[in-house]
Length: 116
Length: 113
Image (cartoon, rainbow over all chains, first blue to last red; front, side):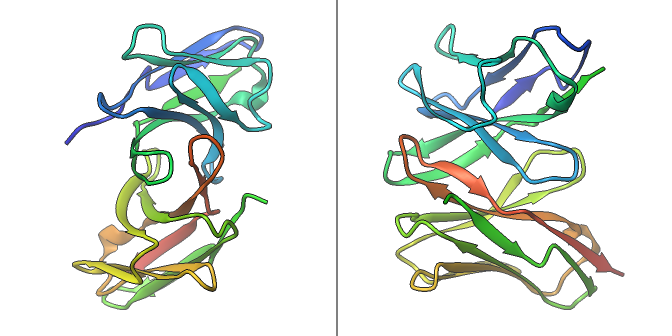
């Protein structure tokens, strides 16, 4: 069964440092997402990406965040200057279907980001 | 707003009993409703989903029912087993450019042996 892969599985970083989280979505999916889950809380939407550009972003996704699809397979989330409250599990997801008939949202195994 | 309400937040059942988790969504255009199981430290794993053109879907011990008029959908697990213990999330796609999934707040299911 196709999978979404994420690296690294765990990243520890100093406050103020930049981090890049990497994802390889399922190859024939066209819609990509980043989500965040603070420990013990629900999964929160950060940003969606389609046709090589951001389609939608949440209030959480401020100027410190950016996404890229640098080479047609990888999908990255960058946090420019990490804060303690950025500590969370970050999930990448991709899905099948069309804009109006979505299905098959598949999540990666996540990157646990710890900001110290 | 973009909201999915989920109840209960915790549910404890005896092994062999049934468990029911309920969700309510607000966007009448939502047309696909997945349920995810999440074990501690792991990814949300899709366990069952339903499209808006059907009212019920079953897969062995798991079923999902949908009431489009009331904007409710529910997860039913029968003959629960200890390995069903996990956090369960419902979700619904909200329109906009890419139908992002919005998640419920989760239900911690504990199946007591």
